[in-house]
Structure formats: structure tokens, C-alpha cells
Length: 205
Image (cartoon, rainbow, N blue to C red; front, top):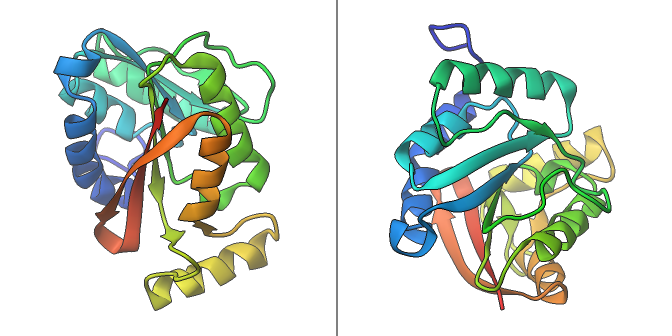
């Protein structure tokens, strides 16, 4: 917990600075001033005010499917008091309709490996419905590359995920990219991150 009582998961505290470095580069004011960003599976809500404060040219809409997470996100939003950070919305990524009607960028941190594959399918289907050309889908988390988990710790993590829920597991970049391509998104970039994580950048063509 943070000093003010708001949830601050240690992993979120650690990964916020390197994630922000990438976001600041790919979501520059030159290309995204005044644009809408939807954060999928915002979790505790720790990231949302940090990123919204650092990227004031974006209108930031956090979402999550979990009621307790939505409460935590709402607390972070209220404490931050930022004009460009909106109240969180309940959003099931697998639903045929979402409670947002447009997005220029979508950010999804640590969801793809800890959700059924249907969530990844829904992520790109929803993004395709909402986004104009050149819109970005940005994901972060552990991935394998052509079957290589990149680290023994990721092998063990994948095994633990699948033991908890057989529908979970670390996904391969090529499989995520294939889903993205099926919805009109090109895989622009893979960025190596600390702790054997990756950020994947997809652009709507």
C-alpha cells in the first residue's frame, strides 16, 4: 500500500517508469495531442494517474471488469484530481460492445497472460471497432518469442499460471501478432523491458 492508503502493488511501482518511457515516445504530443486513450484491465489503478499526469495531452479512460479493481481505480482517480483522467468504466473485453465509442490508443498491461485467450481476441476485436487508422494498441507483459520464454523464470511463471487456471499462460508474440493482423493491426515494434517483459506496439493500418 502507498502512504496514502491507495493500492500500490510492488510490480506496478517497479514497472511504471520503464512503461512510461515507451508511452512518452510512441504517444508523443505531435501525433496524439487531444486524443483518447483507453486503458484495459487497469487493475489497482496505480498506473493511471502517473501516466495521465506525465502525458497531459491525452484524455485517459481507465477500465476494468472487476468490481473491486474499479473501486481501487476510482480512489486513485479521485486522489489525483486530474482534468484528463476520467472515472473508471466497467468493461468486459470479450463483450461485443464496450462502454466507450472511440479510442486513438489502447493500453493493456499484464492482462494477456492472466486471462483466457478469448480476452486477447476481444481486445483486438474491440480495438478494431473503436479505432481510426494509425491508432495504437500497446500491450505489456511476459511473452515467448517463437517458443522461447527468454528466461527460466518465465518458464516457471507460465507453469504456475497454467496450474492456477488452464486457460491462462504466457502467450507467444507471433500468436498475438496473428490475432492483431486479423483485425487490421500491423506489429510495429517489440520493446524489451526489465524483468524479462516485453511491450508490443500494434498500429491499425
